Length: 556
Image 1 (cartoon, rainbow, N blue to C red):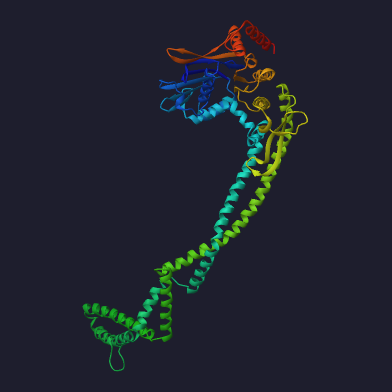
Image 2: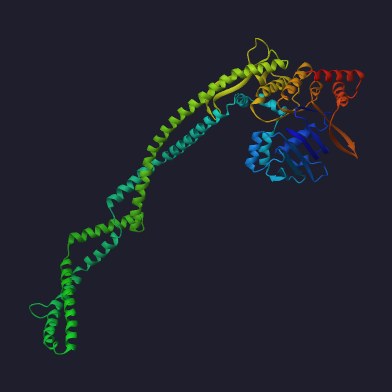
């Protein structure tokens, strides 16, 4: 619960310390006294967005600090997640708003970012203002009301996991299909490239080898004659001894003398090596001569092959390596594009299975809501009867539609304002006072669905009076037995229900407007209730009426 709040330099509030009880705390005061500023201050303390305009004129900063006690498990878990320890079981929140627009936040004296303060604030306090009635006028938000009542969150989370997976898969299929639309022409072109280069069957460095062989073929006669003459000079013929034969003769000449003179033996061995080398060279030259016998068909083939390779290099080159890589890349891309059709087919099968699973979960969620709706209608009807609306019936209209993140249900709360009338949309037939009471009825049946211990109602009595206002006060009193309730009101019927009645009043001090907040005793409450009843002219009759209302409220 919120034990105490301290406010400094917040609009017309110069300094104020407000203590709260753990049941029904009611704020009253004249219009413009600063009730909305107090709510704004609490909002700021809970990490909500504020502007620099909220800082009191002439002050450098506004300060709001609050103390919370009896912390529930959700708050303790969040504090543990943030690495913050409660101080003697209590939680202190502080927010500073500077006149230059800057803002700082602290939890138990530790600086935190605003989002962390907001996360904690959402677990501490739930504020219901006049704007909440807009929820009733927005049919798209009615599903949240029913789901909150039904505790449907586990089912919703399970369904949404499947639904979001289905969405992602559908987007992937759509992307692949768009890609496929432009792939057919590409596949045709790749096929042409593959056919052309496969038929070419080029090998790495083949062009260099062909160029070399062509160069040799073009000079075959000259090279053949040169090789033949050289071979003859080395090997000799019938007419003369070649170098090989002459060296053999020299070896024979040295053979007899090498046994006597060692120097001749060394020379004979060297000459023997020369003779072997000359013989090998002559043999290789003979092979070259045989090889250089011109083959016209081979020569023509070499020329044709060279032209084929040059054409491919001009188209896909500049080098033959580029041509071969083009073929490899084309085959790889062709395989990838060809497999995309198979990939889409697999994804479509997955989509079919996932759609079936998601639809089953949506149906389970719908049946869960339908059962909860029946209980919801009964409980809200009971609350409305208590709030002086016995003939008003709430009907949960459920229609099935396409799958969305909320399931397959379109839900709208309908009301029948009078016996025998068909239920109609709330926005079309409910008055402002009816909206306030319907909202309070909804809050009442949902109140035990969360563990937020402090509820704030900001002028929930708008548009009601008399017996209806009294019933709203009684309902807030009932809720305050389970939760701490803070309520801003203009009605005496609600103010008299307070366990702690706080007056917000403004005055002029040193030509400046100053707002003060103080708790009232019984006599002061009589004066304030009388003011609410009769305005500025407080009479004995209004005082007596105020005392009777207060006394009657104490018996409820």
